[in-house]
Length: 431
Image 1 (cartoon, rainbow, N blue to C red):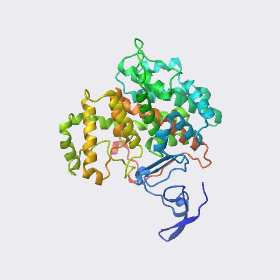
Image 2: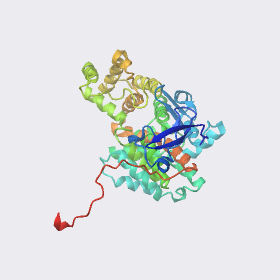
Image 3: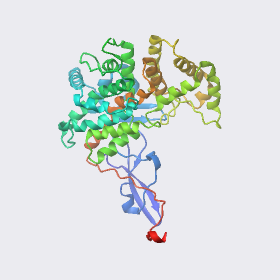
Image 4: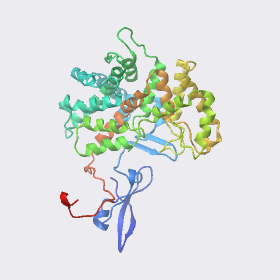
């Protein structure tokens, strides 16, 4: 951590204490309250930790007011436009963009670890066919610690590296198998001659009777979905991974915990909620009715996929995602898909409406990624597993960074207790 250059003065009762302040590379200054309880006998109260920095990090920076998202200093728009997912994975994991030799070696290592242990297939068969793919992924990823004993020692730097590569490589295989299992089709094994995104699409849509030739437009769109969801700073699932890791849990358990948190509809289910809203609207002629409802402050209806909790201006990921959405819809067509017809018309009307412009309710990455995944043929139940697949590298990068942090302590948030004070136990016959 950088040296403190100034202090904040806090008065608590008759005590006045000095709290050190730190200035980050970007973003607001941070007040260090680690000694607050020892010096003043009080805690801070911050539900949701929205005003609390839980760590210092060098991976991702977000400025929601300005619509900025960078990975290791590189703007997300440039990475999504000029790079590809595995190159961004390297950047997140190791801190710098790779040389051609480094990238080739990294891609080779990932590609050659895409197979999963054959016995793990039995785990899939233990689930009901109608199990949600996220339930399957939580179970299977957690079970990896039972199969890969040579990469669970978090104190061994090489084992951490092996676990990282294994998780990034095997997550598409696990997600595709979860999809195949729920639709009753046989598993399709990965192929080493395909790139990361194309391999995933083939494992999802190929069948033994007929191979699936991946269209480069669809592969590029999927790669961008992966890239744009790779990391997003200290969000709920990333914080879950860090909290689990602080206890010394193995990497597979930590990532399974992240997947479980991402499953929540308030976090990873936004693009699924967007598609469900489009289905509720039904046809383009009903769009004005729902726009009017969205403007009515007394109506609980909200346009899903518009605006963002973090980005108060615009979602910097949405511009690139819109380009891919337009390309995919042109390739696949929208004539026979009423949901996609609604999506295109809703986007048009919302962008032309001054109400949404004034409130900065622009289409976000979830709106466009949901449209793309629907056009590709994925059911909404697969949207969050694909998100988990993409976010795995971010979780791993944060996990590795935390393990190398000399200030690491087990997470132990405090509370504002509002229950009963100490009282005497009453024997059961007197109650």
